[in-house]
Image (cartoon, rainbow, N blue to C red; front, side):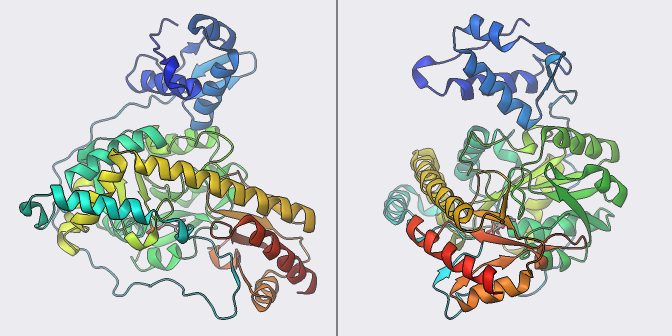
Amino acid sequence: MDLHVTLDRAAGRLAGQLADELRAAVRDGRLSPGDRLPSSRDLAGDLEVSRGVVVTAYEQLVAEGFILSRQGDGTRVAPFPAVRAPEPTSEAHRRALRFAAGTDAGPADPPGIVYDLRPGKPDLASFPRERWTAAVRDVLRELPHSALNYPDPAGVPALRTALAGHLARVRAAVTDPDEIVITAGVAQMLAVVPRILIEEGHRVLAVEDPLGHHQIPMIRATGVEMAGVPVDEEGIDVGALARTGARAVLVTPAHQFPTGVVLSPRRRAALVEWARAVDALIIEDDYDGEFRYDRDPVGCLQGLAPERVVLAGSVSKALSPALRLGWAVAPPWLAVRLRAARALHDLGSSVLDQHVLAHLIAGGDHARHLRLMRRKYRARRDAFVAALRARLPAVRIHGVSAGLHAYAELPEACEETRVVTRAAELGVAIEGVTPMRVRHPGPPAIVVGYARLTEHRLTEAVGLLASAIETA
Ligand SMILES: Cc1ncc(COP(=O)(O)O)c(C=O)c1O
């Protein structure tokens, strides 16, 4: 392999830099499918870095599906060229979409709950109030009056540009500000994309089974039929997906909600292959992709097949769900349709909030906040898992060290609803997995959000959870 790789030693993160360089080489065709990469020892020698740097970079790219590593065959570029295939941009249909009336304002804290461990919310007390206030002041000082008009429904250019850089850096996404549409959160994507699919002649949307229970009614309200596809230790079962006959699927590859597993490299490749074979759309819900604690986050699926994947994310986990601010990175044809949907339905998101977020991203405050929150959440997760292992060794934690929730499988004899009810009686709010299932039954399990409690309070809550399981 004769490949030009530049590493900035002073900047640190050598493995991350090397992964970025190799990923870029695959994307722009300097490395082709099937190309053999040098052994970690040889490349480390060429680059004058430790072998561990190359091994870590290779592991990252294997996890993301860019390269394959096989005993006896060395390391090769995966068979799917991650190049951007042009898609038609001219079909700007202006048909009205009908939204289901009424939104769920979200659950209030139930009475009598002392430890709220329901999943889905970040630590609201950590919202960077001062930085946000300072950014509002800066933005108001700088913005001309004309900017306070109705925005481009796809979002203000400053935010789309800032996000393009952020998502490329943090999620290894392939981004172009023109293909980013600002949304009112991932929820808006789940309400809009199925309606676009129906307009395009789809009847069925495949979903992971189980999936987020708040998402189920939202998707049902669009009128699309949901086909639940089982999830195992490697993520969605792509064989079962193909058998549904669906040509669109909603997945959570970075950290499956709720089971916490990461979509394996094999399954990533198979999912992309399926999408290309049947001309399908993959909706990638990247709801907590910025939070991985044991290693660099696995890059998003969109980076592997930007022409097939719409990447949906939001600031709901990183900052606050109160902002109702998110994004979709879409193939060009879909970006046009999403922009049209916003033009038809709500004329876009708050200009001021968009500029404030752009300011925080561009100035580095957002990245600093993410680093702080990763440390905080990691400590909380570790404390929760340690307490659970000590008090409840028969309960099995699934998935990787990531996100804001953990999936805990209960012993077979436990009755899940009784455990949830008994925990609530003892002042601990958790959720069972059963309401998150579409069709496929499975072992009893609970889903626990650990983001909002300190380590000490999490340990106390686990004590009560143990009593609930023992007395349910
Ligand atoms: C699976 C999943 N997707 C998406 C979201 C975020 O939705 P939004 O960005 O609309 O706040 C959540 C939040 O709880 C979630 O659990």
